[in-house]
Every structure is written in structure tokens, then in C-alpha cells.
Image (tube, rainbow, N blue to C red; front, side, top):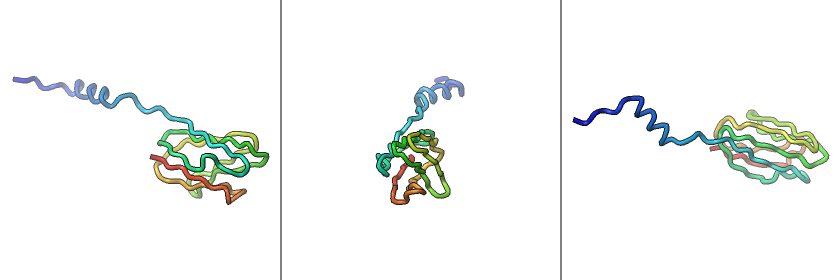
Length: 104
């Protein structure tokens, strides 16, 4: 007769097979000369988006209903990603500035 593994052993095995939890990444976007660069990024829930504004004027990273981050001139601002989806964002002060975040 083959002994049945205990529930504790099965849970331990599942944890070993799953591996360590993924570590959040910081994804940097530069704003310079009225352009988000890169204009398209991929992220995972829990990652941090960091916008570095190299311009002499304020900008925003805005997706109506989702987020509105103000980035002062010569400063950085951050956003922690909280849900999956595709987010097309723009600067409220300069609506021609557009970019996209794809969150898996």
C-alpha cells in the first residue's frame, strides 16, 4: 500500500514549484521636448512607473478615470500599477503628448 501524502507536504510542494514571488520592477519614462519616451511600455500589476520630466514646464500622465499624475518641471513622479489592461494616457497641459501602458 502506498501512503497518501499529507496536506502539509502537498502545500509545501506547491510552494516550491511556484517559485519565489515576482519582484516589482520600476519602469522609467522620460519626458523631454514634449515627448514621452518610450511611448509604449509593458508592466505587471505591482510595478512602478516613474516619469522623469526633463522639460522646464509641468506635465501630467492622465488616463481619464484611472490615474492623473502631475509631474513638475525637472522632477519625477511615480504610479504603482494596480490593475491589468491597456491604458492610453496623455498630458492634460499638452494633449498632443500621448503614450500607452500595457499591463499584464
